[in-house]
Length: 211
Image (cartoon, rainbow, N blue to C red):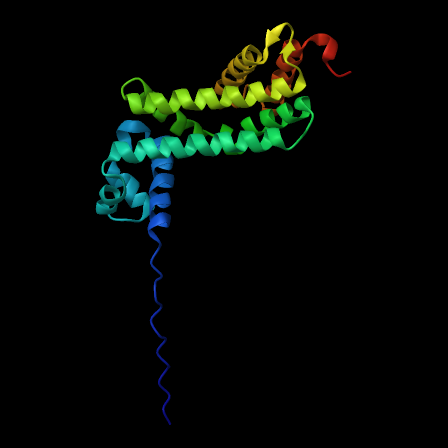
């Protein structure tokens, strides 16, 4: 009687598609920049985290800086898409803007793991015009989203055009978001959202504030 144990067939490892490997490198770049900053996030460390050879970085992106640039573009686009979805979830502008504030101060966009990546990308804005263009486009699109929300409410608020209202609201959001990320123990998400809503009430006019 043959009592030998059956030999399991070798498991075939499925190769990832090229677009999945590219995405792995982009995700790893953001994670490495958040953890190590632009100086410590080397191409080899990114590849190690992504589980690919260093040659694939060159194959898909050409150079480390090009990988970081595309990662910045992708992160910015994903952030703006989330804000747009939050704004589009409600027809009434105040409710829509509150949803946007809640998205901004959520764990997805207010955590230390993502904040470090933003800081790293911003540090490259002053030295590389390509990063500066991404930054400028990001700000333009963010303020355009806000201006559209204000425009749905009324052509003007507090005697200001929608574009000016959007710029003021964007400045408040950015300042509170920085404080929230730098000192999470001093500013809770709920408090940051509440302060944004109070600033919104002032911009729209206290007479329009809900009771």
